[in-house]
Length: 126
Image (cartoon, rainbow, N blue to C red):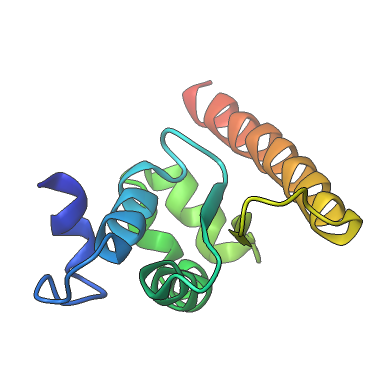
């Protein structure tokens, strides 16, 4: 229910499928619990594509609503913080090199954001 509540801000709960859970889970967990979102779905999956479209747009527009920590909200609003998000479709085959490279970049972005957020949290508590 918590993920659905978060997801309903961006997508009607009447639209069936897991898109609302992907979107709601992202907004429920990002920043305070995780520093990046990887959405993996079957090739041609419409709920995965809907979630991807909504998240690419809303993650940057709603940065300030991702945490209740005032220092983090200020940092997110003052700086151009980009949240790592990667959506991958698969048919079960081995990923081509370009997808592997995108995944490596995603991991580097998550690591960097984690360090930045830890630094902000550390400076806020001192």
